[in-house]
Length: 307
Image (cartoon, rainbow, N blue to C red; front, side, top):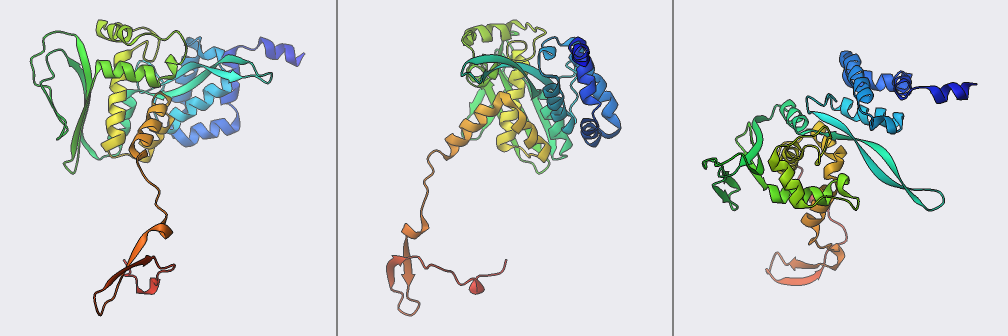
């Protein structure tokens, strides 16, 4: 009888029962304090209105929501701080076959990254925006300076930029063309891992048309994703990163592959050096004679300066 009742239980009721579990409730309380009830109410509202989320495991949805809660980023789609996007991930079955499983995934929005940067108290200025045709005048690759003081010719978006200045005076700008952004999205986004992914030209055309759909992500709102990506790439490389910001970047699956590839690129030419194989110069302090040999096995730490 209890099984029949469970089968008839609505998805939203299952979600509510999971949230009400003492262990889950405690985690929301620890993360949000007195704002817990407001966040939970917005999560339930999001779940009720997002039919795709209802196809996912309810517990997984709650766990992804906890990721947003620990960063204190609201899940209200209208605000644009954070989202839970459903990806159809391929999962291997016990019999060896593969099937698509709807998987809820926490994704920070561009406003979320700006919010986290502001909380550090280290940024004097941070700005990100679209670049329209005619506005880009000069790119100085050596100095890392970009000039956007050209005359705007149309509402056609040609790229995205982010600029920040820290309190200590350090500043940096990053510009990414719309063509580079489309190639980036197709390469790294989990949304485009299937066979029916759009062409770069189709993504660019949608972005420049200004069309925004109810779908979240590159296909739903390419331009917002472009802003988020340029912000993330600039801050992750040159910005002041708090623990919260690092956590958000680690959880951002839209850029997980890019982070991995950038790490490989930066260290791909590194060479491992075995200390024992390196020749060591012995200097006779009396005669000044230099001879080659092996490094000493142990260092006299007593003689080392105490810093």
